[in-house]
Image (cartoon, rainbow over all chains, first blue to last red; front, side):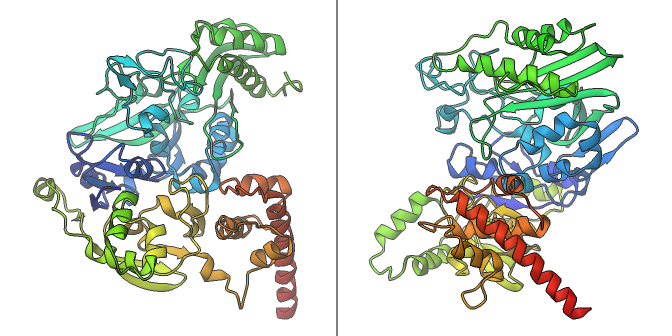
Length: 330
Length: 219
C-alpha cells in the first residue's frame, strides 16, 4: 500500500473541505472493506484518506414522516438489526444479510455498498474500468463468466452493489453533498454505465459524499430480494432480483423488478414489471415475468448460465414477495 | 508497508535475526516521505487535523492495555498488532478481508484486522485472542477446538476462535444453522468446518452451564 495522509473530521463541512477535485486527491474511508484492498493492490492510490465515521451527520438509521432514512456510515449489521427494516423492507433486509460475512457486515456501510468499485478482475488487475487493450475490451473474448449479460458494452463489469437493486425497486433516493451544496438523486439514476475509461459507474463526483439514503414508506408494498450465489458466504451473487409490488386485493396494480449482478448498473426490467399488472402472483405469472426480465440479454462466451439464474431469481423474488414459497427445484 | 517494499528491505538486510524484529525496525524508520500537497488548501478551509503520510502518534487499547506507537496512517491493525505489539494471533493470510484469519474484536464486534487501519482503531476496545485465551487459562472455545479436533494446519484457527467467541457473546444459544452463518466470515482450506461447528456448539453449552453455576453460587 502506498502512503497517504489521514484526517478524521468530526463534521460534514470539515469532511467535504478535505476532498479534492480529482479522485486521487482524497478518498472517503468508512468501512474500508473495498478501499483498503484497492489501495493494497495499487488500483487506487489516493493522496489522502478521510475517515468519515466520526461525522455525526452521516450516522443513524431512523423512521421519518415519509419512510426510512439511512445515514451513509450506517453498517450492514445496523441495517439488518433495525426493526423497521425487518418488518417493512424485507427486500433490503435480505440484501443486507447476503452481504459477504459477519465481519464485513460489522464493518461495511450503506454508502460504501453504493460506492464500492466493480469486482471485475480485469479492473482489479489494473486493466482499467473498461479493460481496454489496443482500443478493444478484453472481456468479450476473455474470462467473462462473472460479467454482464444485459446493457453491456463498452462496459462489461456488473454493478457490485448489494443494496442497489432493492433501493431502486423501492424508489429510494440518494442524498449527495459537496462543499457548495447538496443534491438528491433517484437511486435508479445514481448508477450509470461509463462510456470511456475516465467514466465512473456512479454519478458521484470526487468532491462529493453520499450523506444519506431515503426510502419511501413500503407499508403495504410487498417486497423481496432473491440472490443466487456460488458460495454461501464471502461472495457476491451471480444474479439477484429485488421486487416491489403494489397490490389491489390479490392482483398487482404496480410492480418494480430490478436485477442485480447482471449489468453494469442495477437493471430495471420495466416490461417484466408491466406484464404483471392486473395479474396475481402465481408460479406461472412469476416465471413469465422472469422470462421477460432477461429479454434482450446478450451473454458473453462464458456467462450464458446467468440468463437462467436471473430468470429464477425474478421468479423466486416475486413468489417470496407474495408470501408464497417456490416449489423445490423450481 | 507494501509486500514488495517489505521483501526488498528483507533482501537488503544481512542482519535480520528475526523477521518480526527486523520489520519493527523498518516501520519505525520508514517514514521519510513528503508531506501532502493538499495541506495548505485544506487547513485554510477546515479545522480537521491532517496527519502523515509519515509516522504519527497512534494510541491503541488492546486487551485492556494502552499502547502508544508511531505508525504511518497506512499501517493496518493486523500489522500493528503483529509487528509492533507481538499480538500474533491475528494472522495475515489473504490480507484482503476475505479469509478471516486476522479476525479481532473491536468494540464487541468481530472485524478483519487486515482491512482496518490501525489509526482508525484508536479510542476503541480491541480484543485479540491473547486477551481472552492463554495456554494457562484457555477459553471454552479454545478447549472445545482441541477436544473436537477442530483444526489441522492451524493457520485459520485463531481467527475462527475469535470469530466464534464474538458470535457466542451475541448468540449464546446457537443452532448449527446459526453457526454456519455466524462463522461464515472465516475460511479453512483444510476443511475442518464440521469439527469447528461441533466445537463451538460444545463451547456454547459449557459457557451456559458455567454461567448457571456461577449464578447459583451467587444466589
